[in-house]
Length: 200
Image (cartoon, rainbow, N blue to C red; front, side, top):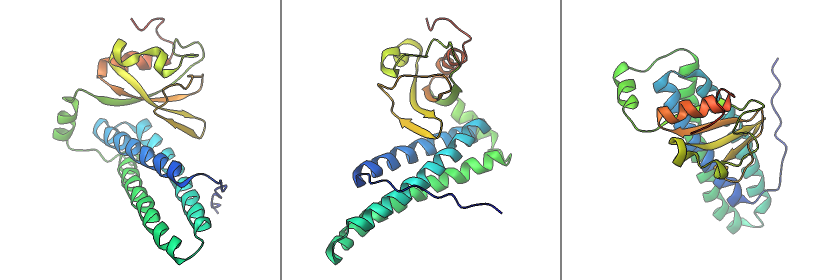
């Protein structure tokens, strides 16, 4: 029998939680769309991990909203905030549904894939191995968009997600999510895997 995961409550500012929920839902939509078009199961799996994080954030948001209400007027105001959180969660659920199709082997029509392949930017993910030329650098220091036409838009470190990780130092075992041209993403995946010694 499966156990229901218990989310640990944290006193986090409501605004901070909503911002993270917005960032994660946007990331999930991008990843799910790319996973479906490119039939990329690893990307779909990242969407499912993000969905778990979103579920945690919904719980934390609702707890903090309930604790913030001192009277019916507060509750009325906070109900609107809760609605925003609920709708953001609906978006993430939809992304999860798309990722679920990919994981079940349901493919999109070839015409949709052809259209996507003509776009200038795609998404990809990669694991950072020890000794990678990316290791020990912050995303900002690498200037990847200028150098190779791809940029890291998120880092997963264990169960923790770092969205828009400009000053975050890249470490071995990190999983990076990047957006860019296919050529740039190929170079970035090679760099993450320790296959190249230079990005030039």
